[in-house]
Image (tube, helix red, strand yellow):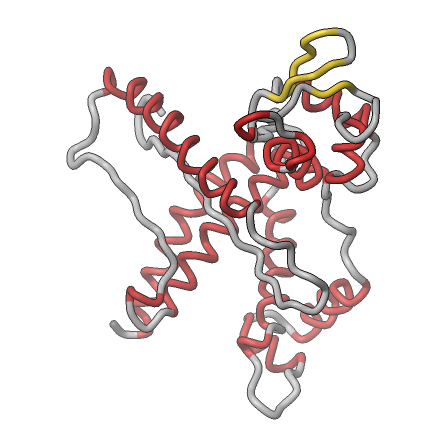
Amino acid sequence: MSADSVKSALLAAHKRLFQPLVRILLRHGVSYAELAEVVKTAYVEQALSDEQAIPGRKLSRARVAILTGLTRKEVTKVTQQIEQGAPAPSTRLNRVTRVLVGWWNDPDFQGPYGMPLELPFEGGVNSFTELCRRHSGDMPARAMLDELVRVSAVQEVEHDVFRVLTRSYIPSALEPESLERLGKVVRSFIETIDYNFRAKDASEGRFERRVYPEGGLRKTDLEEFNTLIRTEGKVFLEKLDTWLETRDKPDNKEEVVQTGVGVYHYVEGPGK
């Protein structure tokens, strides 16, 4: 394919990618100008990355301007903003997830057959307070518990004794944790697609597959299909989660990678 054909195909693909994202932005009052500023920053950040550098030469702002199509004045402004540092991203989503994973996988909070124990809020090593201290960092135990009960991940079975119901934390729509999750989920998927684009052959790529019925699925079968996905997908992810938790934790000298697996169910067109 010619360079122009590749560019046209990329722009068409990104239009499709942006359509659901723009739908979310419009729904919540984010204007084009506000999004454009974010996209501008992303362009400069990527242009400054090692991938764009010429070996042995410092990446100048003039070259960043050439790569991005921005003016040098714009590049200077954005670069200064980057150098000043952006606010630290929210980590509440990670902390809540770590508490749930710890409840299911930490031996100190497991009973017979590896099932998670019902925990009193306080009371020594086998308590929710200790679980929270060990796995959530600095988030107060009561605030953590209130959030888990609110999203139906945990229930109170008797006074101040609690049972965990799920390994997954799905915050309600419009909350900061949901928006943080949006960015992480979509970015992780696109990172995999990009990696596979750059792989020399399929055997070097990361696993990414889809299954779908040719010609579509009868709408009356959608509910049954959804139930199957939720059941089998939960089993699959819990198996991977258990395997990951059996790995030795890396020490400060070891190289680490941020990795994981995501499973999603999509529905397009009328009735979605």
